[in-house]
Image (cartoon, rainbow, N blue to C red):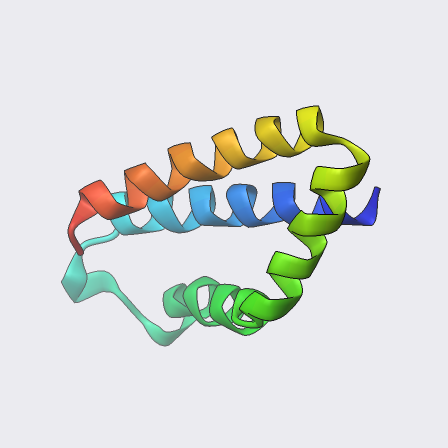
Length: 84
């Protein structure tokens, strides 16, 4: 259960960053507005931990993993398309 929450949290927070990047003009970008970007990196930069959790979830509930990863891919595609 903890793994599912963590993975869905990645997609949710990436969605928030996507919204920030699409709605905020460069001249309005402050340290306060950059905080979500910094916290996202801090919270999810340990890729070894993420891979371990995904591996466990693949064994326990592959259907749930597919759903979570589809959401993450969608948000990642949006982020990459922003070209910011």
